[in-house]
Structure formats: structure tokens, C-alpha cells
Length: 294
Image (cartoon, rainbow, N blue to C red; front, top):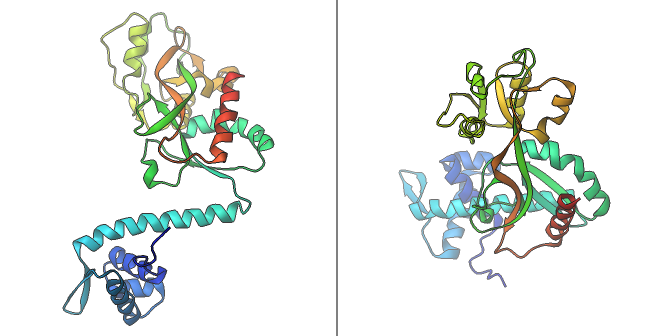
């Protein structure tokens, strides 16, 4: 049961958060469409309710105490969570929403083409997708689960293995007139790589008998951008085969040398171990397991 004694009113919370964020009572009043006097009264009522000074008044200016600034960071997270919950309710008034953080390339090329099947099997669940490129703290987010690439190193997470990557060296046929004769011939071409996987070209060369090399390469933060750069002749790239099957089939990209190599990481569905599992996540995880086994 939530104790109401120390639960401030929404107007008081909004007033305190706005003063902290905007830096003044006048700016907070303008944002909330209130008078400065109304802002002051909300803050005074807030202080009286919790019995702690939140504001330092200096020369007719309001300034939050250090403790109040820390408190505002917690308030802001709570308000964001409340706002997200309201959006979820509005989008799916029957309940059953799943908030999923995805990696853009995996989401576009592997997950999205399969989601219609999940929707047909589970019409009671609405899947909301948002992009996140790196691990985050589930406790400070609205996400129920995430698609993760790498190792099983996400703190406090449970894992469902999804996919192991096969990396293939490719280039535009306009750049690569013929397949390379030796693996290290690739170094004579401009190279492209992800900023999160700067060792891939060195591993690829070592796999093909050319160890102890770490060639320089242009960096990208996403596969989609790097793939387009390779298609338009900017350089050779190491890209998971499942992301570029249509480009290989159409001839927009051609293999540079040798077979694909396995990446060091894998794709996983991850979710917080310490949070009670909701039925939408259970349904989604079971469906994903079936997709992997198929």
C-alpha cells in the first residue's frame, strides 16, 4: 500500500521539477501557465507536507537545495514513467503491451518481417518498438525486454539466444572488379567497420592466414549506414550475411574473398530477472523460441 502522507500533489511535483529544470520561478510559471505566486505557494505546500526545506530564497530568487536537486532527478524519472504508462494505455486500452528495445539492423531485417506472425497468433499483445544501441538499466526505463548483441554480460538480465552472425567481406562491384587473390589484398582498398567492432577486420585477416594486422577503417555506428556506403563504392565492409542477402542476390554487393566467419557475439532477447514477468513478455519469448527452432 502506498502511503499518501509523503505523496505530494501533481501540481507541486510539476512546479518543483520545472523550477529545477528551467532555473527560475518565472520560467517555470510561464511553462506551466501559472503566476509566480502560484509556483511559490505550490513549493511552500510541498515543503510543509514533507517537512524538509527544498528552496533557498536569495534576493527574491528561488534556488533548489542540493538535496532537492537530487530529489528532482527521481521525480523526473517517475514523471517520465507515468507519461509512458499513459501513452501505453492510450495506444492499447485493452492491455497487453510489450515495450521492446531493438537494434535497428536486426529489427529491420530479422524481427520486423516475422512480427506479423506474432500479431496473428497474439492479437491481445501490442508490441512497441524503440531503438537502443547499447545496454541500459531496466530499472530506469519503461522497457520490458531488449534485443542485445554481444555476450551474456548485461547486468541483472536473463537471456534467450536468438542468432549467431556470419560475417562476410563484401564490396560494390564498381569498387571490386574481381575477387581478391589473397586476403591481405583487401588492405589496398578503403575499409569500413562498426565503431563497436573495431577488431573485426583483424580477426577476418587472421582467420584467412594473415595474423597480427589491425588495418585502419572508416567508422560507422549502424550497419544500415555502412551497408549503403559499401553499395555506393565507399569501401569494403564486413557485414552479417542475413542483413545483405537481397544485396548479394541483386549483385549490388559481391563477396571479396573467402567464406564468412562467425562473429564473437550473438543476438539475444534479454529481460530483467528481478522484475515479475508479464504475460505479453511470456508470449513473445515463447514465440521467439519457436522462430529460432523453425
